[in-house]
Image 1 (cartoon, rainbow, N blue to C red):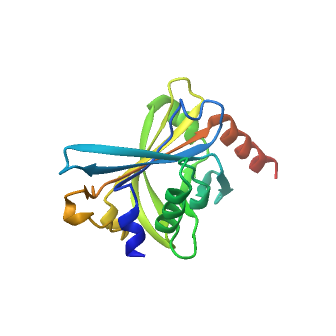
Image 2 (image 1 turned 135 degrees about the vertical axis):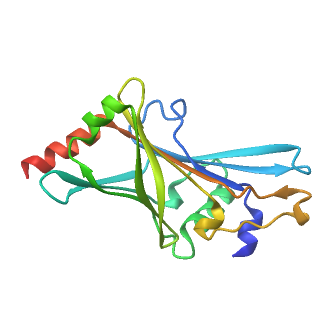
Image 3 (image 1 turned 90 degrees about the vertical axis):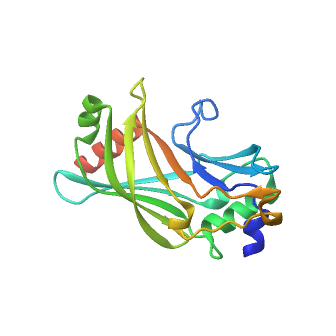
Length: 199
């Protein structure tokens, strides 16, 4: 498994949404991978994307909701099949476990509140390689109020992900940093909430 980490081009994992890449999609995620090369003089970036995002919203009480985002690591596409296989192994582990982000006990009208505040800090959880970690998240609305963006940052080492240096760091050196970002259609969320009210 360590060999797979070494072969990965990415040394900084970023799951992020690009409005340009996903202009025609409602709910998508991507990762951006970066490694320092040539003694750290320059960086190389790789982006893998997926629009196969599963979103579950459930009620916990009459006024509170749970929001769960699920993505299969194998659905990320970086236009390089070999790299995509390594990404699946690193993010999903030997059993290719899905990535999940959880938010619990959100106020039912959190979108309206968010519309006034523009952004809000929340505690959430990230499940990666079958283990769950508590992370601080920031949620915000895009300027056109059509998308909900979810962002978190963490060290890779805090998620028990260790990427090896290549040639002792002379060729490539890991950056112990992780940024996570997802984007969801506001209309999609509202539709899900309305469905819960009628059930």
